[in-house]
Length: 373
Image 1 (tube, one colour):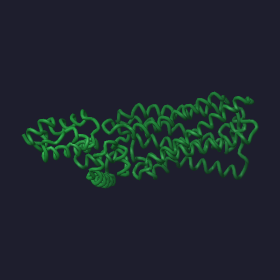
Image 2 (tube, rainbow, N blue to C red):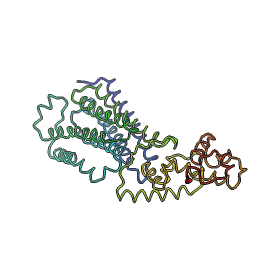
Image 3 (spheres, one colour):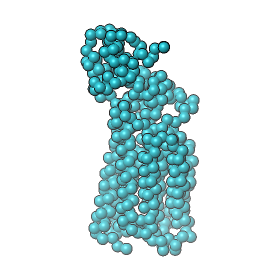
Image 4 (cartoon, rainbow, N blue to C red):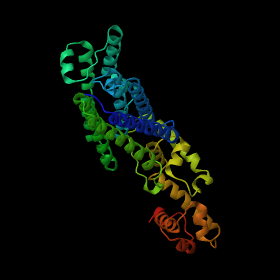
């Protein structure tokens, strides 16, 4: 099968788009997410970086060969080894979303052990003898008895238990906010692997395009969740994609440490009086992720980080009204950090139990809902 000139150009254009998007995504993740206690950024940053590097290598291989078919081999070690580890990084990211902090270094190495052994065997065999280049199923049948071939087939077969493991882990997940997102991500991951293997086995270029579409869909999903949902949603509407993990003693120490830093941060009026304050700013200032921020806020006696922020602002307004009942309530709302009068009024009434006007008349503090009956 010979590729036409148009197909060759399309192949290179797709790889070029892939390289650009993966490098841009890696840069964005590094700039926005490299906080000490947020482990997911390691997985997705390395995923995007290696994806870009792998595509650059494919482009170099394509330019070096007059026939792109030479870079379109079946079970090529240059493709399946980095491809598997790219897949593993996405797997780690999804696992961290489903079960935060479950994936330790020891567990990751144990999960990787079979692939590490096979990759080492392939490298050793390639050093001892020439690796067979296979371009079709017929050639695969001819070389099936060679060690380097059946090890490569076994390597590719490792995708199956990994996908089954993800689906099993997904069924134990109890956070409905992230369920659909994880389902789409896992489905795209499985389709990405399946379409790539099918395109290589059947030598259908359309299959390769489908593979790239799913690959880019995964990248878009990750960027959307990490950059938009976790960083740019207003604090009142934050949906934490990091489901709170169980807190053993080691984790409790971390929560206590984050709670101390959060308390110190919120003791600074210039922080909570900032009308542009969002959840991501607090997360980055403390140097943690949303899971620990929320757990730390609860450790300090609040329902959530949002509850802590609103109570701090409302307490400031109440103290000002007690000191000067004639103060302009509207000005106090803005001084406390609220941009919306309706939002401030709603939270004041909810927390204090009175409207600001009633509070000025009664002069009662602490709030009604905290008083004994």
